[in-house]
Amino acid sequence: MTIEKQLGIETPLICGPMYPCSNPELVAAVSEAGGIGVVQPVSLVYVHKYPFREGIRAIRKRTEKPIGFNALIEHASKTYENRMRNWIEEALEEGIRFFITSLGNPKWVVDMVAPHGGIVYHDVIHAKHAAKAKDGGVHGFIAVNNRAGGHAGNQSPDALLEEIKPFGLPVVCAGGVGTAGEFVNAMAMGYDGVQMGTRFIATTECTAHDDYKQAIVRSSESDIVLTERLTGVPVSVINTPYIERVGTQSGPFARWMLRGRQRKKIMRTLLFLRSGLKFKRSLFREVSDRDYLQAGKSVHGIHRIESAADLVKTYAAALEQSKTMGETCPS
Image (cartoon, rainbow, N blue to C red; front, side):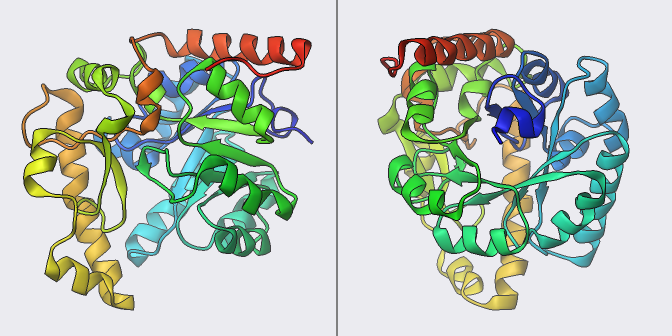
């Protein structure tokens, strides 16, 4: 079964969940155009200030087409886990049936949504993650490669596909796609769909500050670096003068905390809270010399701010043309 049939969409294109950039207008625009937008609940509630259910309904006022939900399932605390379970319950009640799980073991999410016909895809960067997720009952994989924004993988798109494809489930390419040609080529490579994040930040529907969008437009692939200072694991960001000044490696104390099984959870939570505030501040105001700007290597093909809805339609047309012509498009 194709992703389109499985998710009830027209184009195998996912607007990836982004903290803090997944505002309701952006999620709705991608779904309405024929792809699928994914709600990032922490962003929806704590950045865009919607009570969760009201946020979903705000999206529903803009589109009746399928939308997704992102569950970050690493067990930082029992309180957080309970909150995530409540959000999933409300998402199901509001008709959401597509779930992307990140970190942790997705089995409990699969079990929770299965009675409602829910579909679960899990973020993976290696075959070992895919094996565990498949054992947990997931229906597909989001293959996060070394060109992705946010938490990036460490393998190229083709090498990661070669690892994950043998599991026999749909595989979505996440990372490095910013043009219609790259979208078509990812599909021709053997991916079943594509997830984009950075490209959708530089759109009219995204409510990020124009400084952030223009930084993406101005950046080249060589401007993207990985930093461990935000969450303890590599995060792709634009290499600003501030990044150059503070470096990209975690400090000695953070590295010590991250080596312990229990200490790691505490440290990751602390780092996430700190980095979350930094990302949140940079979203709505002029970019300062102390901001972190998440972006992936797809910036090299992003030259202007466009409508997310128009992008989805352009990519869909390019994919249809490639099927007719039986060849890939130029990047």
